[in-house]
Length: 241
Image 1: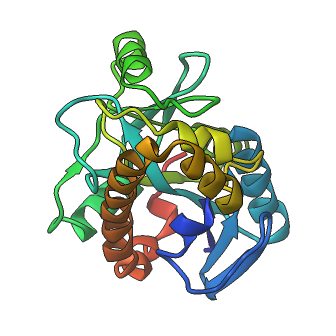
Image 2: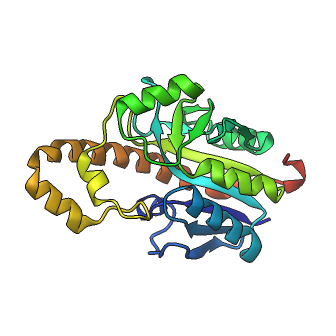
Image 3: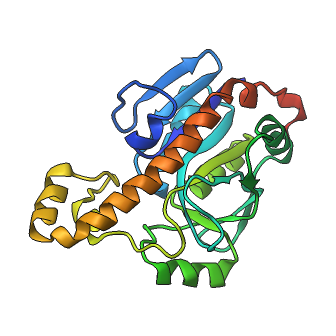
């Protein structure tokens, strides 16, 4: 069995490898795990999932990275191992129940949440937007990639699992500098970010706070990565699709 792991951003992929990857590039962590840097957003995630299945021999998929909280009780670094995802059309996509149970047992020393995660086509960067999305879906967290990966997994009868750590909280408004400096791949252009800060230094405290929250999320993912071999060491015949 080969497990394909899709990660959106370089900052997230650093929790799994020290290698520097370009968008669309993959690397084998070992004989059983192949990792791909997809870029942000559902289209990039779906393309990466397809490539891992068709060209890298993956027959199981993991969505790995950060998510935004939609409920007040989630804090930076909290672990989401959702049972279900809600896609853009309000359809339910199930993670593999047996693989999820195996992963929960593997990570039983960590506190985690299994309530649904919802898909967004764009960044939900305001507390108001997060609250509205929670009211509409009752999901506890949101990301842009997991549902797209789950759809590709379902189409190819591959078991799917998501591993997400909370970066920004439900009441957090992302600094405007982030939107200003973000490119089409969802990556922050440092030169644009610095220029914006020079023009609007009041953004600095918000950026520092966001950085600390993101560090907490990465710390959780790095801790989980130490157990990755055990997470994927699971007999495929017991997996459900």
